[in-house]
Amino acid sequence: AQSVSQHNHHVILSEAASLELGCNYSYGGTVNLFWYVQYPGQHLQLLLKYFSGDPLVKGIKGFEAEFIKSKFSFNLRKPSVQWSDTAEYFCAVILNSGYALNFGKGTSLLVTP
Amino acid sequence: DTGVSQDPRHKITKRGQNVTFRCDPISEHNRLYWYRQTLGQGPEFLTYFQNEAQLEKSRLLSDRFSAERPKGSFSTLEIQRTEQGDSAMYLCASSLVRSGAITGELFFGEGSRLTVL
Picture (cartoon, rainbow over the protein chains, first blue to last red):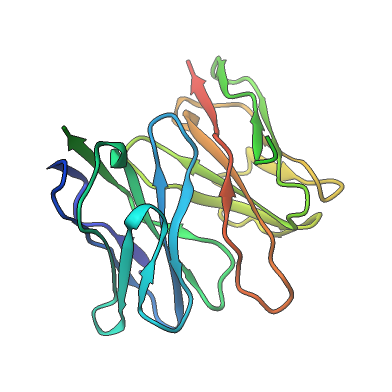
């Protein structure tokens, strides 16, 4: 079945620690990949996206993600997290032939001072 | 604010009642999506519109759910005969998709939280 898997449901980090959130998908065909973030009390907003080209994509607020086609993965990274990165992070996939984003269950990140 | 707006933000209703949520997308966006999100889960796709045409509705959860976008602008999502299992956050998103493109960035509203007692 087609799915998006986020391995870590809850992550707690200290400020300045490095972050990597895993995302794997099981879709055949060409995919387009996204990471969305939801800060407490706010709406979902786009962090970054991959459609084609350079598999290392950079997003807002120092986040980046790497598309590894052979591993069906699109992991999110940030070298040094800040308290303000505390949020829920969602990986999402859409097929080239598709019409709607399919989301993973999300990872809740808590950054402690 | 020129983002996606949803109304009401929170609705409490008794089981068996009908509820309607409204979504006003970003004005130039041609696609409008409805998602549902429950605790601990990611958003779950329900339906979407391209202008006023509802192009996919098979993922609506039951025949109690219906959506409209009569003039290609705002949209409504109605749930008839609500059940406790309908309690969730209902999210609306819009995007501008140009001809031949897959999708644009989805811009989400803040959601309408439904509590069914």
